[in-house]
Length: 244
Image 1 (cartoon, rainbow, N blue to C red):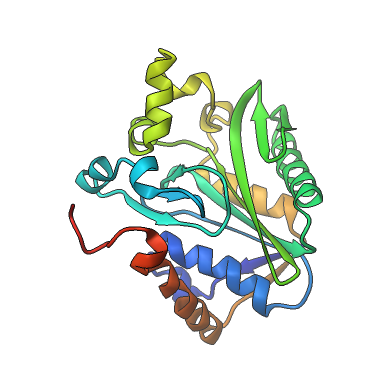
Image 2: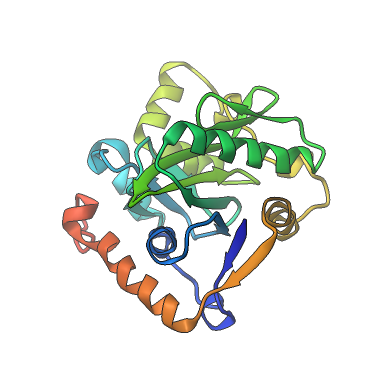
């Protein structure tokens, strides 16, 4: 599997989340058939699913007051929260069947974690758990004979933002009188003492890939063109220039 890498000139630029969604789309549409993988990190952002109503699923006032951005992705599923203390994973492969794609993907991610001494196992269709608590959850969509799967990897995170930025998550926690989101999920950093998020990311990539593909600046420019779709109000379901 190839690790897709941005050139140094592009890697030094702080990117918003839609760039990486567009990068997945570009890889699926432009590169030869094969398996591709890359990781990314962003400033605090909520990502909501293709069919979700942003006003119902995201606490937009809370996010705006704290500088948390929110964007729609093309895959299904529910909202997730990302920040610089966790890692987002992207996997692109041939075929269009969700079950075998998720089976291979979650097995691959769990295997990488086990290689670091963690008792990780695939759970359900698209999650990875350690000790019965979720550390990674994924989503999927098809594109022209390709499968795109992407997921969170909770190395660490701001738990308050995670609970309060996503409206249903907060309501569910309150209704069940769960004091902390940690009752359902876990983070990796306490299990890997002394390991930085950069070291973890490098070990994860080394575990699941066997070669590298460095993109050109021209290819990055193509990704940036695709990125613009993700900022359109009709796609987002709200006007990003509005404060109400």
